[in-house]
Length: 558
Image (cartoon, rainbow, N blue to C red):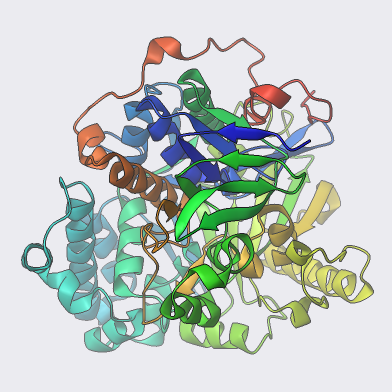
């Protein structure tokens, strides 16, 4: 028998954008249902555990702007979650270490210090670097000011308040490099962190680069206890205010009648009814699989069909039975040569052996003393590289989102093994030998990522292009009652970008300037409703939702 539920709002998917939007609707009195196909909520903030000794972050390797006045802490505080998530600051004098042949640059907090560090490292490029950082800092300041302003400005007001963004925001990073007369080596240092958004300088806009750079230059942090604590805190706020999270609940269809959304149909045949549905699912899968292109205009369908995704990552999850040699609490960005644009061209040709780039995140340095990360005397770190997204490269056909069983595919296993070996060799070049001490090694590919998140192209960064350069869809759609949220929308990628997008959407639905309100200190959630946390509080268990909190199969530490 089909069960029918009535809700004020249904959120499909529980990434950061969906959870933030759902929580703010719940604290505002709406009856909200969140449906997640995976075992736990959190999307790219998810963690997983191995050998009852190691916990690995999937997507939270560091967060920016989490100090006083920071955007992400404000979003959580507005829900009554102040103090439920704490942030450990990384090295202010160098939270990112960029290593090129014969050059190492430690990236400090603040645009002024960053510019001085760069000009000292590349003295022959001082004038161009100063021009570049001045333009990027101005674009970032204008973007942040608009995000924190009340209401939606008119076009005339927007142009008056964002003159540098109007001139440079939609132009590519390469255009700005050319304008500043920068050498390939300087371009590589300045764009070294571009894998944070999965696009090269010829594709990324100045707005994207400026916003992401500014985000971290406001201070780099790691959430104490790992990325799952973010999702768990949002689930606590959601449930405390009458909302519900259901995991292992896959939506088959978003129901639309006469141009209006009416609810969702589940793979098990159940139907949940609501005149308001927020899709935190992949954008193209929402359009083509969950809703159906017949319900959208030709322009939206055409743009979505021709859209380009940001590049995906391959990740090695590594645990070793010794401590790493002394090093700063900083990420490592390692490049084999100093031609960043050539690197992205190489990716487009699907030639990445030997591996030309690595990002290394040292979890056991960022969260010392947290027993879930690794046992005392051990180390936990992740090694990542951008890689080609095509199914052909990975030896598969249509991918796991379409139901393909790929894990025993010989072509896939061969490619995965080759890349694992190449990444290990490069990692030992970058940080020194460690193979003899490995006690756990696991490789995740873009195909793995697609399996768990159903993201097109297996990328955590969403759309690189939807229409013109830098274009991304809004959270509104032409279907009455249907909204989009997450890394594919215009509000940006990453944890904070997705959270800000969820906040903006909740504000649109409620008719309030929520971001400006909470950044000024407004409290919408009731902290007294939140549950007490026991000594054995487990964010993974909380992120399963109250209905499955004690279900079997939850990995534990110890």
